Length: 249
Image 1 (cartoon, rainbow, N blue to C red):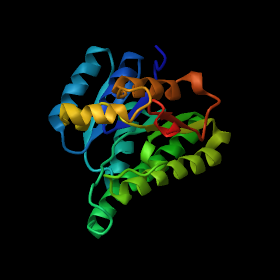
Image 2: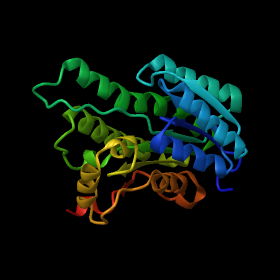
Image 3: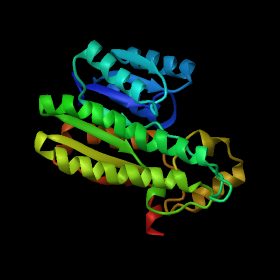
Image 4: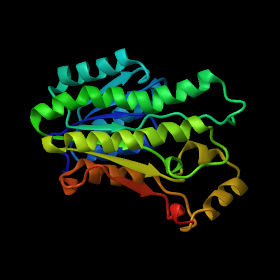
């Protein structure tokens, strides 16, 4: 039980990578605050699965682009569990329009969710972690923070690059309080979008990866477990790439 008696807040918890992290943490003894924006039915299903694994679970639904909702997350977490030990910022959105077709509102929406939401939750969590001289923050960035993608809007790449830089800044500032803050940068992971692709499109995606396969959400969750556990107590300000070797190309 690597996370026994730990309290973890996980955004984007209703599906994909966030769901896998939630269930992995539950299996390892953590109590959970699971956050999603709209998919209440899926979030309830994750809660039920986590409780069957023995976890205490609180579900919260709202938009992390809202400062007020981020304040509510931390208020309800401390009300239910007294503190927060682990924060996983997994929620995110992506846009596809090229720069000349992208609206200003589309730009701001992606930045607000992917970058500002992370900032709000980190800023709210850090004083509690500092008080207890302990904390683990894991931010999900992307391979696209390090290399451009032909079918993504620049807002996504900029937002994830911003998260990468924010993580380094906070890790440097809060290292003296025994707070470890790191990034996970997934590449091609077999989430909802790849699963919906045609057989030909999926194969093309696999062929672009040196390992010739897509990553599994559980592989990302295992990395998030490592970063949340005592095994990573001397790691902060780092980005772990999970991409089957794609950045080598």
